[in-house]
Length: 269
Image 1 (cartoon, rainbow, N blue to C red):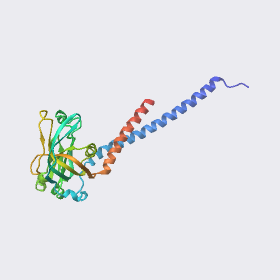
Image 2 (cartoon, rainbow, N blue to C red; image 1 turned 90 degrees about the vertical axis):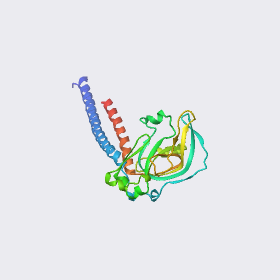
Image 3 (cartoon, rainbow, N blue to C red; image 1 turned 180 degrees about the vertical axis):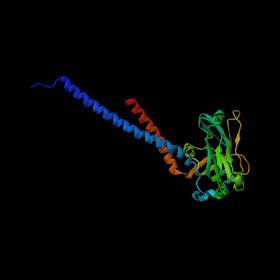
Image 4 (tube, one colour; image 1 turned 180 degrees about the horizontal axis):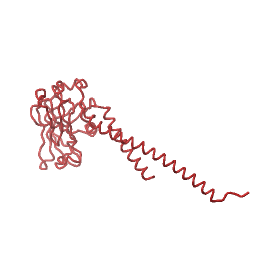
């Protein structure tokens, strides 16, 4: 009986290998389709949650403490110096100060595009938060307004028919100077819609004499000035839109993971 030739077995092995490679490529292509679908869904959710997480809470979701006015009182606290990033600042407490409010806008002074603070070498003021309380909560006018923040200012845009419901003395833009690293981290976590409590001093401060002018806090809610607060205690009493914050975070990391996997698949194929 004649045997099979060596070429016959080579062809069989080659066919098996090609079949295995075909199935492997088919599985990878299937995985690729699934990852692309997840990526698309994640991008859509990221876009939706980006806006939803900044929606203002309803009046029913506001804590009772936000209806009270800030507390300002005389202080005997002495002036002091503090250092940030190699720069020494002189801080002069003007009043004790305590505030409860709803964040409607903010400016992160440490973001790369805020060149004003960098140019002034102002590393003490790390974040500005614009808040409302009291009558502006009661009338719920804050939900029908638009707010945005610049390097030094909070801008409020009021529909004409809502002007009568807005009380300018129940809004303030607060330049925050955290007293320590823990307070700094808590302040950095804040976002629009959060209800917060701040305790500290209204202050004026400057770099060492001869190296920069003074920045001085407003000491009344009746002017257009901003409050500068040296913060000794800071609390996020209630987060706004928690579910949408989670969706935003999950979507963001899901997009990153999908892009990494798709890159690996591209290199394999």
